[in-house]
Length: 50
Image (cartoon, rainbow, N blue to C red; front, side, top):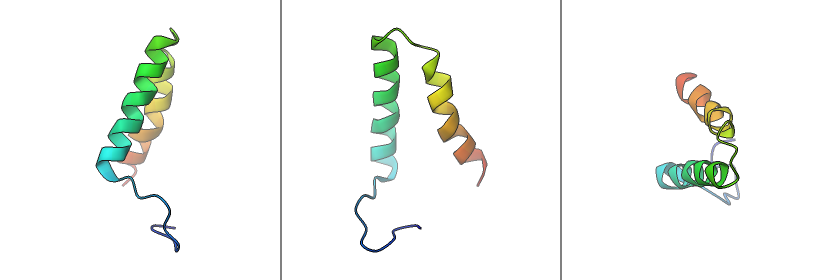
């Protein structure tokens, strides 16, 4: 499904880092720091799966 026609969103590194940073900031602001490893774990597992 990589870049499936018509491509709507292709974030790349900049978009994924911004999304990860937003997840982290939101988790800290709502005092749920335990969400950081849970949400970050998805990206970590995707990274090591390749």
